Length: 397
Ligand SMILES: *Cc1c(COP(=O)(O)O)cnc(C)c1O
Image (cartoon, rainbow, N blue to C red):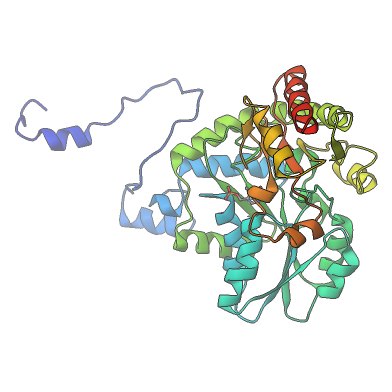
């Protein structure tokens, strides 16, 4: 090196890491966009799948692959793909697998952007959507047409936490030869594994419970069938849905504590749901683990005792009361997300469901006084104190 002192930029680029006989215990981050292959023959081998090697990060990189493999393990899937957001994963399913002339069926309370894609965007590509109540498998069966290709459902709906008739829908999908895609974001593989119950495709917003710290947006999609998976992977690579290595690494770190966080948040949710039901001005509490939940029996059969960390409740009154409740809980994050390690409170009428008319929200069971809580892992007494203050303030108006 000393003989080429006039080429510092070249030397800086070429000097690599020293080899180490010991290994890092934490996954290294691989930010490299490009990968150098030893020869054209070797590169052929990579592209033909004879050897494993990366080429260009949009086509795949180690941090995304490792995260996908870990979620595959949790879901009982294989060959899953990480995308730059949950919506990218939903898009990979809907746009990567459907074509003009196809028909798709969606749950009528899907995540807002999924609904928007199905009702606003798919029609531009000549794909029709029917929305149906997923608690009613007969309604799903009745919506199937000869050109129906796919059913997309969430196991637990947002924000009314209705539980879909997954067994009934899976039976319909099988009998009619229609693909069943399940967005498993709310339930997570701890409560429900779609592949174990007849799903063809599993989707996640990794942003939520799996990563768990509200510091990354990522998605996951996996299909049981290799051809379907290849079609989605090629579409995702072509449309640039690729996640960043840094975000994959953060999500992997979040995933280490996911089972612990989920169990704790769920235990808190069950206790908080019962507590809320005893508070002044609370009209109703929705939690699938409570006996008064309309789908409690189904949730018990489906979720194996894992009723999740989401609780919804409704208070008496209108905007004055909802403002009072939120303002009396200044330490609570009033934010329309879910799955964070900390509890977040959302108000569908002014956030996720603000585009709907008052009547349309009422039809879905949401009034102005309707709130949704994503329960976190805080001390339960602290949470009870917050909500007691909020409910008291609202009920005193
Ligand atoms: C948040 C969410 C999505 C979208 O995920 P992003 O990571 O925000 O793109 C999809 N489905 C459900 C159920 C969600 O909660």
